[in-house]
Length: 73
Image (cartoon, rainbow, N blue to C red; front, side, top):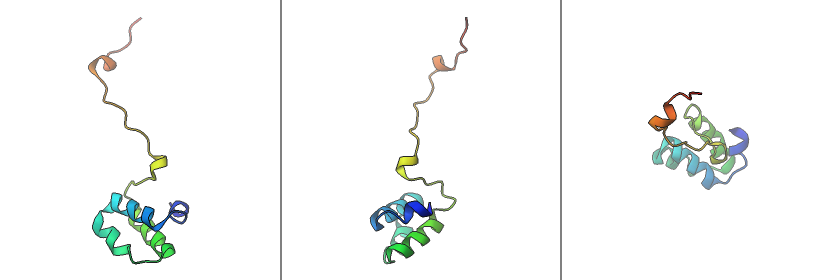
C-alpha cells in the first residue's frame, strides 16, 4: 500500500480513504501535504480490505441452480 499511496495524487489518496473509511476520514486528512497524507492514509486503510482498483477482482454473477447441479457422464 505504501508504494501505491506514495505514487498517486492527493485526490486519489482522498478517494481511497473516502471509499474505505467515509467522507469524515477523508476530510480530516485533506489539509495535509501529499507525503504526510500518504502516511496517514496508509494507517487509515489498514485492515479495511481496500485495494486499488487495478487489483480488485470482478464480481462474478451468482450461480444459477443449473450451475450447481453435478456433472454426470
